[in-house]
Image (cartoon, rainbow, N blue to C red; front, side, top):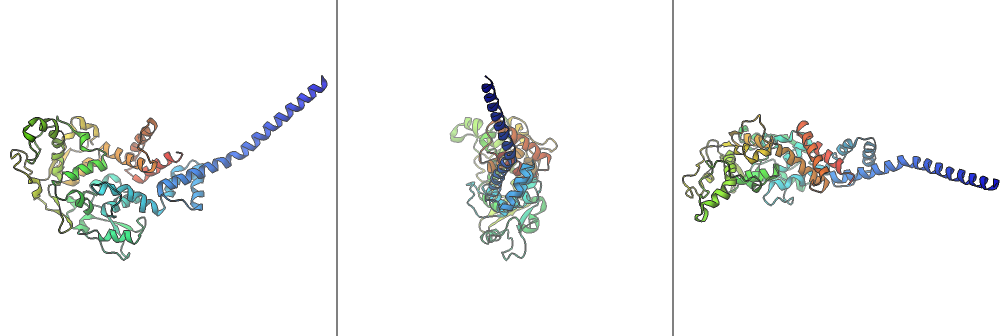
Length: 397
């Protein structure tokens, strides 16, 4: 009996000793495991933002910040890499500049302006109404900016100039010679004019701005309850001899679009000269294309616009109550669009998709996007901050 007790006691001491040893080893390994996880997250964070692996020193610095609970600082470190500007931001903005919405297009003034604004923490709501333009700094050995061609930006791209280090801010009015009051951020860049003011009736500029900056296409904002009094003459009131088509379909888009697209009445793109035209006080002839389709329709007299969508179902786009909802010209329309809730939410959703590689879908993702949108507005529309917040949220994926 005594031998059994002694044997059991020895066994108990042996098990207890092994358990204590295991705990000591685990405690010793925890910091190492945490640091290893932080390094893994740091690499993932850098890859998402810059698209290239970090150097060893950068990785160590980022991992230390993550382990210390400073993940946003780690994200800002990653965004110091020139590839964040030369590749990530360029590909982020490029689809906004063409009708095919492709990244496979040459660098241009629209994209360069977005990149510069993000780099400099310029309030991003200004992207639709400011007198702002980013060009390559002097001394780079490239052709100067021209409102008639894209040679300046093509040379910056072909020579591999750093968009992080070599872009400088200027004004469209000084570079292009249009009045300050006629500038409207990226909407009045040469690239945007070439894509969306060319030919047509200037409705394309309105539609693609909605798509690119409010994440909304016309099919999503149809509302047959809005007054049709500002629908232009080129829209038939009885397509194919059936007025029901107009009342149930055409009116749904045109009743809201036409009063706002009137803001672009003085703008055009001259394909021969290769530049945007602005004729202050003179409505471009394109606004009277097919005017005989319905002569009793609205004949555009100037560039005064009204937002009929402030009432009805499209009030859900979240229009700014401090603005009048009407004005003259592209600049005031740009401010109307950029100060909507839909604008803020759209930029955040696009960043989220860009760095998380997915559309926010589940409850957790949507809650995160909502919180980031509130932060975006509260912190002066700084888009770089949104990139940091989105990337740190997804770094554990």
